Amino acid sequence: MTDPDDRRPHRSTAIVDHYGALARAALEGTHAIGGETCSSTGCGPTGYDDLTGLPDGAVRASLGCGNPVAVADLRPGETVLDLGSGGGIDVLMSARRIAPGGLAYGLDASPDMLALAAANADQAGLGNVRFLRGHIEDIPLPDAAVDVVISNCVINLSADKPRVLAEAFRVLRPGGRLGISDMIADDVQADPAEPRHQCAAQALTADAYLKALRLAGFTQVTITGTGAAQGGVRSAIVHATKPDRASGR
Image 1: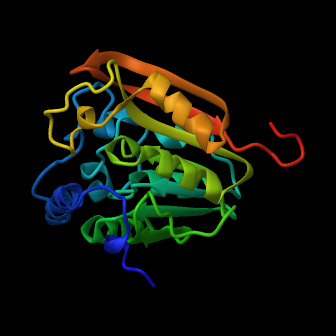
Image 2 (image 1 turned 90 degrees about the vertical axis):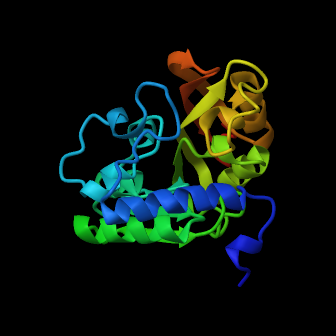
Image 3 (image 1 turned 180 degrees about the vertical axis):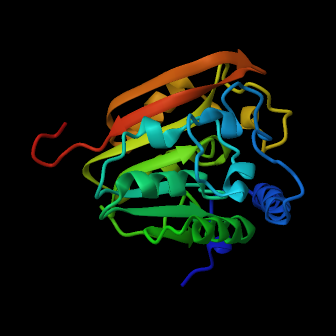
């Protein structure tokens, strides 16, 4: 099997190392890292309505810009994939919503984040989760493997967003849904001088995001900005559907 670190293109080693360091800090309980990657309201743990019963390590490691679990309208029995699952907060929340009979996958390139997520899943006592090491540009799952793809402020970090979206489309079953939280830029590139692990560095405009989703094959595409723009970017909710074979919709 190909080592995930050898696959191209994907998020840079610097980005993976950055998040790995944050995961190690969370495992040690020494640093509350939530919301570190963006300045918009609703980032990190503040983006969730109810964190009851979640392991403290999962909450500390929450680095997202919204609540994709709520965005995706998950249902019992579904199979869900979280792209860039980090400390596992969205995988754990998904696993609860899709029980009984559902399965939640988390995909991340950082071994440290995967170790943190696995520890959090063990603490939560959830048996319907699986964590995979790999890159969101090369998802290690077969075609039509999941009902829903979610992600939380990760796709904006990829250097090849069209490939990420094509991979998400590939692993979705016909009629499957994409429901993500991400960052969008007001301009073509909000802040090219910002470090690549920060939100504004590679965020797409809403128009560019819409175009990429449609080119990947998605239909019923909507992107809704949430909150006021800060530093040239804002959080957004992204919905899209893989057409059903029968209806083509």
